Length: 346
Image 1 (tube, rainbow, N blue to C red):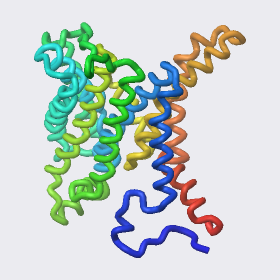
Image 2 (image 1 turned 180 degrees about the vertical axis):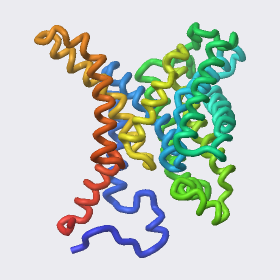
Image 3 (image 1 turned 45 degrees about the horizontal axis):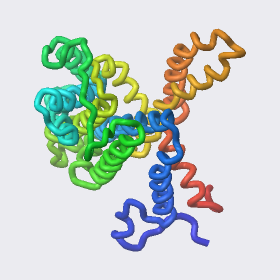
């Protein structure tokens, strides 16, 4: 009886989905996400859209933190650059909404590369403080700039496609899904290239990577640029979806939330970014619905729910750091390995 996965050629070994079961599982997931909007209500579609946008941003942060080892507390700021960039390009320059998404992402990439310059000299906690400074500087610039409207919200015209408004929950679901699939495909293949392998080498041991000829500075700045590009794209999608941009959506709390997503999902894992985005995004909704269900028997529950949500957020992070530092991706990988090696799973 064959137990495990065996490859006899390099071509088989390099496949993204080398086994028939893995390909079948991918087909099942794709069918599920395509069929989902036809059976879901507006509330469920809203949550799905939030998860999709969060997953894109989490993948971007994981490229920087999980794969390259550069801690960042500025993800919310780079998303803000993408959101305001997309909104301003539409309202000020009259650019088509679909074109503002990649353009705003490029602007965010340039800003991220600039704030990534200190990464040559800083690492660990010091780099985290530097990215925290980027968060504060960008937030200050948004509030003070007359171009963005300051503390007033920036209203973005509803995007249309062939005369149909698409920022409704059912319509924009497909736009988010398209960009999410592109992001996943890009991220997965990135680490099969020279650039991706350089990122991983820097994460594992930057001095050894430099000795082997890896240009540390160039690849660190590239990692910041790629991560910020994806974060900016996530922010631009959020701006077009919500139709309104406010700096309060992109505070330090947002950056910490995205950091929690990749910690819970699994550092250095593209699929883990998605798992973490699903859990962290749906957790407040689940607790809120649970509080509403218990509201009749426990009248104080409505006032306790916000505190319970924050407490649960912290507890989940602590539990994963203690019991499973590699996150949900490692749990899922252990389950798959158990059944792949069965009946010789020991």
